[in-house]
Length: 614
Image (cartoon, rainbow, N blue to C red; front, top):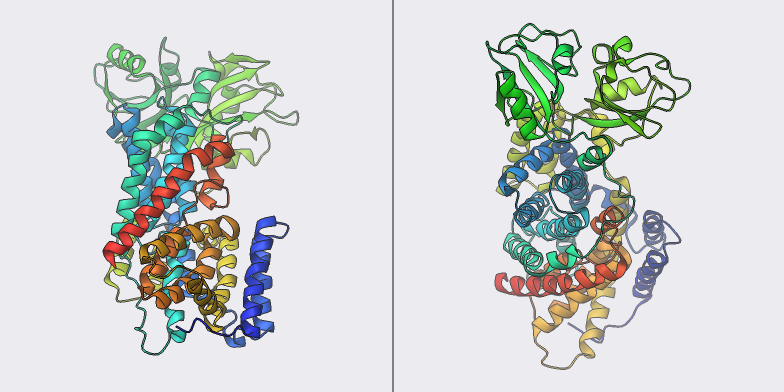
């Protein structure tokens, strides 16, 4: 490479745009997506990118792949896949906190290999809250290990993170500007970085197992944690509503045979009865006059010993596995919520029995909080007043329909979208086929992922409007607008000029691995300033030219850059980190103390593994 390459006007403009982007991103006076749009327009007006190519970022394989992974993630979310996973994790951990944390983080890391990192974190937030509420772990102890595992697990495939999705497009674009005689850069296949991802995930889990967990144990959860729904711990402490859900099968000897559901609820020391299955009809919050017969199945919630004693006294067969009510009690479909009676409510002056809350609305009243007094006995016959706080158990859809009348106001956050746990097997089958198509490398990854999106839409896992809402348009717009900046860096020669002058100032005979470590750290620093997408777009062309200048492998240098763009565990500029800092209450100094060693380990593992592979 000619290190004496002259600095042209086009190079100056490109470097000025890069500098402007960094300054605006740092001070955050202007929205990041607006900054990207301004940069895109400037590239078009100055002619640095041909007019017909200015908006090609919106149709690039990288942008389409990001959109597809977002939609596929919502499809899995709608089926309650991760809530099933939470139950499995609890069973497999067998009450051991270390094992629970390890399993949860490892599973989250594997999930992130085929979904966008922020999407996985959004799905695992309620999972972590539920696991924390049912174990001795605090939210602050769970969220950071899960976050680190998600970021590191994103390196398992080429669609796990936005930088890796971008990488192949940048490698392809670089071929147009390679010096004569240089080998053409090939796109990386779907699972090319998997050994690196495995090494990263293992090193992250090992760090928390041997050191990080002790440091996290000293942290406290933040005040006013916000989770997607009130946790089980909250309802246990505030209302005494606690325990797991069990199935009770009514035998021929049971005194409950012939009773109404309401009569069964009134039995002394009965647990909270929430569901009833008679013949083939399964109902959550069944009406009080529903009859119980031989073979009926009752869904009961309470402490295991309480439910076991009730089952023994009433000659019921108890099962801890939800064979009949698995879908009904899926937390993504149903759960406990709080609601306030407003002064304008038609419910005022009437009891739950008079209102037929269960028969008309499918809502089960568990408790009433009135003037700081919790009422749980005979709540069905308590006359409701304005200002009463009702504790309700219901299917989320039924709760949302009832809330539209404004007769009570829901104060608990709950899933607003329609949940489809019955589509779980269909969604998983579509997802598996999508991954197999992508693995075959016969079609571009973007086409394979969009085929999966089409499958979920055709088979009813998602509706079209839900697919649109799944897309984070800010992320898509940011990426699509900045992609041409990377092209301009390469085509104008700015990347080659920077690389050449960098080499001139370095000591001769410097080992290539030292340059790779410096490049990795530079990219990580850039990602804190201009986001992981911006850092990838700006630094990858520079990395390729730097490799050519020192006789290194351009693909290896580019891969190190793309992986290092996600190496930020200390600041909120990492989109995954920004999601957990508030709920867990992490402070800046705590993140730097715990996150900096992780970032250094990340850099060493990435450089070592890339050199082993390339």
